Length: 115
Length: 114
Image (tube, rainbow over all chains, first blue to last red; front, side):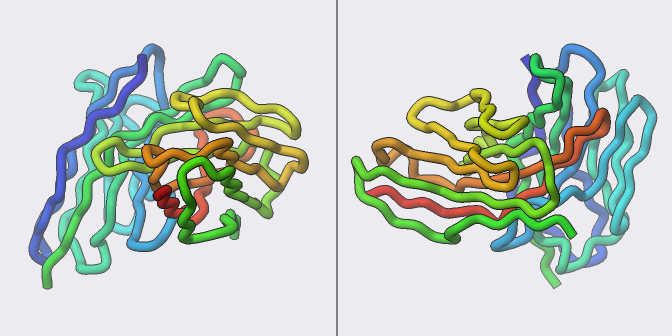
């Protein structure tokens, strides 16, 4: 079946550090890939997405590149801020049996940035 | 902005009670979803609906049912709550479009069953 594996947390970094959160996937077919972020006390919101191999999604200084050869979609940011503290979820979507899409999520990675 | 609202942020119920979690979206989306979120397990899909009065089982439907009588409202029902249903419940909605697909989430309901 389809699955998403992301690095275990929690991750703690100092402000302005470089961030990488690893994500790999298993899927039959060609999924779209997403990173969602959940800030404290809030629901998930889409951070970035990519729909085909070699696409790069970017938003708010975060980037992730769809790597088909390594089935990966690692999240990166060059200089993190305290406001980036949140839980990050990698996800994929594929057409379901009903012709619409379902999202499959990873387990989430809690990121804490220290001033 | 898309808005997905959930009826309660925190809920405490007793074992065996019938529990209703309500979700409303204001963007005329065809698709609506219920997930539960547990530490170390991420989000798991309970049920989803792609049209009024239509429902489909997700990955963990046991112990739950749903109702969608109106397009904007999707209810999750725990017929007889049990302690292993203590969790964060997230509702989401999404438009009926082809790739790529995005879902919009509510703030969640943290349910405790004692």
